[in-house]
Image (cartoon, rainbow, N blue to C red; front, side, top):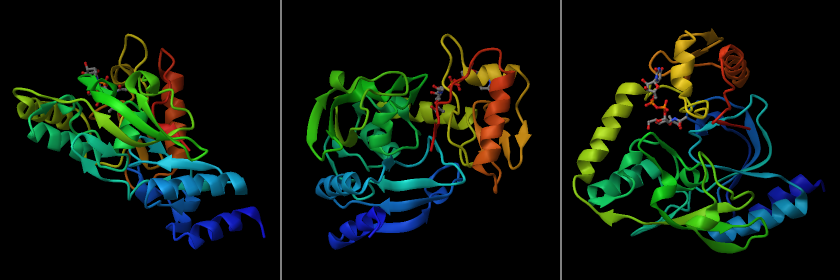
Length: 287
Ligand code: EPU
C-alpha cells in the first residue's frame, strides 16, 4: 500500500477527522488556492501528536493552517497534509488554545477591562497564527502580551516556552517546526481599554479595505519605511492583473475581485516589487 494511503488509514482508524483533496480557498481570506491532499482537524493535542507521528512514518509533509488571513495558497494546492486546529479552541482565563479566534479574544479581554491586546483590535487570526507571525501593526505586537507558549514538536512532545524562548521578531518567531497549541497571556486591569480598542478598530476600518477578499498587508515594512506608502507613491493603486488589483484604500493590500488566481496575485506582487525603489519582502506566506 502506498505510504500516503497508509497515512489516511492510520488517521481514520483513530477517528481523527481527515478529508481528501479538500479545496483550501474557502479557508483563506484571499479566497484563492487549490486543494490539500489531506485536510486534518485533530480533536486534541493527542490527535495532533498521532498525526505528526503518522506523517513522519509515511513521509507526508505537514503544514498548519490558522485562519488563512496571511496566506496565499498556489493554484496547484498543497501536497501532503494541512492541519487546522479547529477543535483546540478553549479559553480558560488567560490560557487560550491555538484554534481560538484571536479577534474575539482581543475583543473579549478589552471588554473585561484587561490591558495588553486592545492595540491589536480587528486582526483576523487564530491565536496560534497571531503568535507564530507575531501579528501586529503600528500600535503594538502580539509578543508584548504573551506570558508563555505551549508548543508541540514534530516528535509529538509538548513543551512550555517562556516569551524569551519563543524568539519573537518582526512578524515572526524562532519556533521552526514547533506548533503552537496554546498560549498564556499577560494582561493587567487598566483604564480606558474599551475606548482604546474602539479607537484602533475605527482607524483600521478607515484605512484598510476590510470586508474584501485580501490577505492583509502583502509586504513587510522595509526598515524605516512603510510598504503601503512606498507603493502608493509609485502610483500603483488600482494596478491590476486578471481579477486581482492593488487596493485603492491601502496600497499594501491586494484584493481579489472574485475569480482571481494565485498566479494573478503573484504576478502583481512581482510587478510591484520591480517598480518599488526599495526591496519589498513578502509578509504573506506562500504555500
Ligand atoms: N500610507 C499611504 N498610502 C497607502 C497606505 C498607507 O500613504 O496606501 C501611509 C499612511 O498614510 C501612513 C503610513 O503609510 O502614514 C503607514 O500606514 P499604516 O498606518 O496603515 O501602517 P502600515 O505600516 O502600512 C502596519 C501593519 C498593518 C497594521 C497597521 C496598523 C505591516 C506590514 N503592516 O501597516 O498590518 O494593520 O500597521 O496597525 O507591519 C498586516 O500585517 O497584515 C497588516 C495589515
